[in-house]
Structures are given as structure tokens and as C-alpha cells.
Length: 80
Image (tube, rainbow, N blue to C red):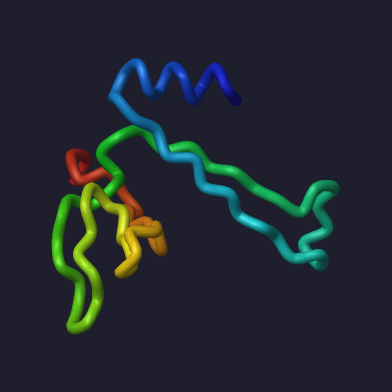
């Protein structure tokens, strides 16, 4: 998995690894899934809705500058 992440970073400049906890009724040996996405899935800088902080490169920050959310596409925008 580390090799895939590094290869993705070398090709597209970034990679996104998403950890997805799974339910116990899913009957998985390890109740965790990961998915790796290449660069370009993060949404660009924008304001999102009334009263929410702006986000920069898909990362939303609170008033203290802490990361509170990641905004990513469900598909790669260049592949539409």
C-alpha cells in the first residue's frame, strides 16, 4: 500500500487515503477499509454555504485554523 501511495504521489503530486471504519455485521476480519485516490479529487478553494469557513484545496478549517473536513469529488473531474 505504501508503494502505491508513493507511486501515486510521484505521478500526480498528491494522493488521498481515506480510512473507512466498517460495521461489525459486515463480518470482516479487520473492520476497516482504505481507499487511495490520485491527485485532482480534492475540490478547489471555495466558500461552502452560509456561515461556513472557506476551504483551501479541499480542506475546510475552523476559526482556530484546525482541519475540520476534507471535500473531495466522488469521481475525477478530468474523466467526465
